[in-house]
Length: 95
Image 1 (tube, rainbow, N blue to C red):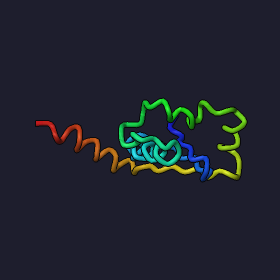
Image 2 (image 1 turned 90 degrees about the vertical axis):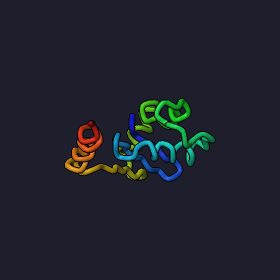
Image 3 (image 1 turned 120 degrees about the vertical axis):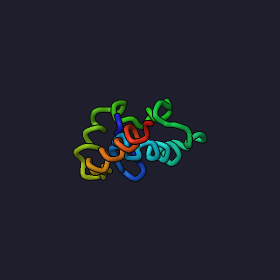
Image 4 (image 1 turned 180 degrees about the vertical axis):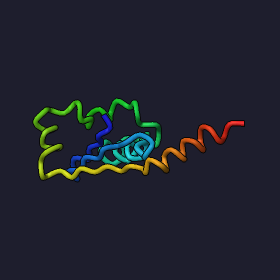
């Protein structure tokens, strides 16, 4: 559900929550879909479903995952950095 597709660039980007996926979804809505409200929270926008991996034909899904024509990418955070960030945000801030 977090696979963002940029068909003209043949780029499939796996968006992982808490690693900037909101910004990438906004970028996708702006560049691919031409959305005027691209700066709003994109997670539940219906227009993004047009390029949702789960709604694609199975043959196209296979091409994206296994084909040589597509580039697949992912950004991730260091687990220790993520744990520290969560601690500082959720625990250390409390009075």
